[in-house]
Image 1 (tube, helix red, strand yellow):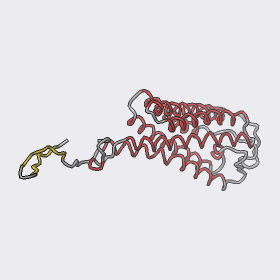
Image 2 (cartoon, one colour):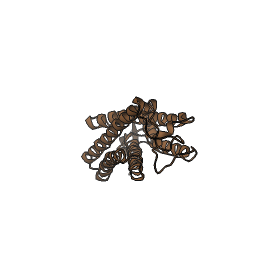
Image 3 (cartoon, one colour):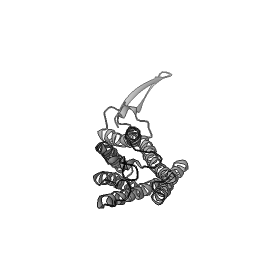
Image 4 (cartoon, one colour):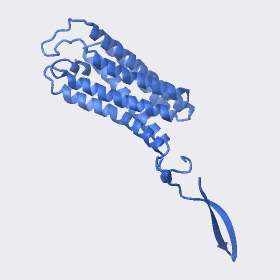
Length: 247
């Protein structure tokens, strides 16, 4: 930090003191980290809005009985696959931002598990689910394929990893004395686990699809909240706008 020798005249006497000169410059590393975390805030709304738009425009799709993943089937299935991959890339960017922000064991756990979730999203997009009753239009839920099984496996691993990341965030916040955020991480992790498990057991029922939606929304909520929180932890990239505590 640059310091300036300043002369001050008071009551006829001149004294000198060291004062901090205004900081100038730009911290590129901080800017990159904040940008990466910002994608974590955008990912969930992007995925949900695009998914719902496709859901209401695809013939035969029923939001009360069909999970969004089956939108990958049929003539326009590439749209939902693209939606999943783009959201996954945003999640991976956010995971990199977490790793750059929290440089300890829990930070590594949060970043790694979030990254696993993003990777599983991409793998799930690469292996299409099996048709379900009524979608694509006229289909019956009779076929079990290797692709469908792998889609479910990657989905399960992804949700487990996401729940683990939420729990790690909760423990990190608890250690930092931020109890409300700690509770949020723990609640989201629990909802993700129970929602996905319930959705798998009650598949293609109204309750099952509802529980799966609960898990999906809890996961996106945690990613957005955690990314927004960590965004504030990273010092402002413009040095002149940093507070004394964030310098």
